[in-house]
Image (cartoon, rainbow, N blue to C red; front, side, top):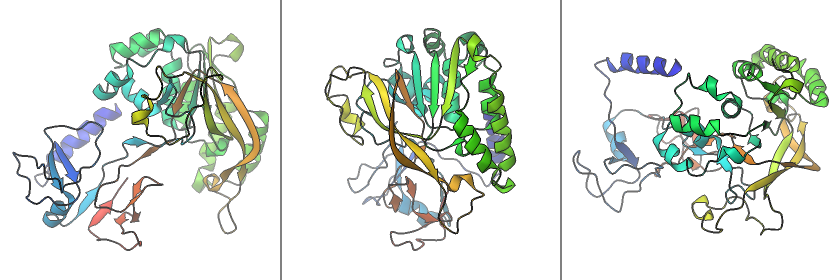
Length: 379
């Protein structure tokens, strides 16, 4: 229904005589020696192309400078098309370590991801799944893995996804976050749906986490979601419709854990390389790749904000490693820790945060000065 609403809103906007839409356009960097014509894309070597996961040979390249010379304002709203990496050993080298975004695109029928993931996905050999990240995308992945296939058939899932999910042997899904219950990013609506899944039990929250969160909740203001967080905590304390002892499958929320290594199933095999390695070439290093066997976590504690920061905002608390570690066996890992934008050549880009450098949406240069008040950024 929400997708249909987007369609109706677009149709309403497109009827405005001031509106024009141009497709198959790729915005590039420095201006080429000769401007591109509408019928012939430029191939000038002086044009730096924005990385594109699904490039089209039909796309016309237009330098950003050309847009700025023809329009009084340029608003950059090209989204965040890459996954944030965990940057830990084993992330790119082991089999069954996947992006949650890729999995969501797979079961939604995205043509690029469906063809990419289909040969690699075998849920018939998966029992335990770990999802790193605690937002709605993580909950969506867990819901698809645990919900009875017969109940999924009423939705628009492609046949290949339904066939693979019917083969699934997934019994347990663990959703892991580096901070606490009050920093949990899932919404009440999504959690309620998880708790009502037929034949699926919720393992409950650790008593220590519940009691500490309850004390901290007393200081959370309504401005920072105090009422919503209290409702969420009550929902989780009540538990699932299917009691755990009568459930065929289960899910859990684990807090205050930061993954530090993803380890192979067979510890006698060669050590996996360090995090951050280029995944494009990782598959060439070992044939066939080793399967994931476990995740090593740092156990954390929450540290309050520095003096002057508001204690009423749970998101101002940060996670700090205690020095204790924990290893959990698992068969599959989904990374769901957010997204990042692609740097557009010619624009200052913050590689660490994965966003165009800006102050309140106005693009800035490397020194922090506003480049132009008419060049705006909206993530």
